[in-house]
Length: 271
Image 1 (cartoon, rainbow, N blue to C red):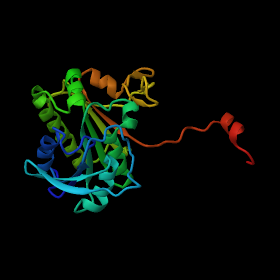
Image 2: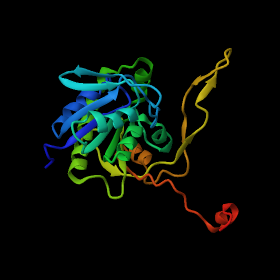
Image 3: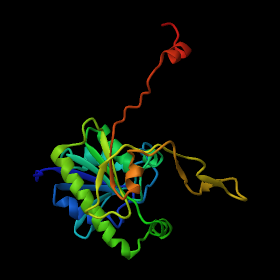
Image 4: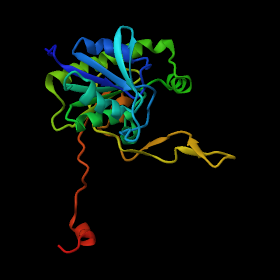
């Protein structure tokens, strides 16, 4: 059974008005004490950027009975300040999300503010987990265009919050998967509480140009992002999601590449 003294730091990259924040708080509050620190505004695609050069306004607000602390900064700021300054004690677990949109595959994972907050968490010595929810295509387009959701998706949000709560309980009970620095979880748009859950690797993806030149001004603006898969997807998060499974992906940030004899001969000197 989960200890009532477990401490969760909750953050996200969609801000305090995310429609899934309160449903998630309802779920997590049954398992632990929750300190919520989120960006004051949406900070998608900000990875692990830290606000080094400006002070961050800190405001506490209330939503449906929950105290939510906001910072005029990025998800990684919220993680660091939450852990070291705002949480009443060192968190047992940092939970980042639930992101409105998938973060499956390497391209999105390395760009995601949701995952960036979890990276900041484990760099501060706190086990961390990032959660993302795929939305149906039209629902996601409406969210991006108008920052609102089709009311028909309310059930999906409730299910995603329940799924996240169950995985969080397991993380509190047994810790991260062996050898992992953190986990990232992607919930498909057709998921329900009964959907299969799969431990996966991360799909190798890449993308090309994501900006377009203005037709008359000397400037560029974000246009679109078309992700393509490199190699097969066997055992990957994208493969699991394609089957309607919830992808739980342990990540270990071991960034060094193997060094071969030929490269030593090419680059080393004075050895």
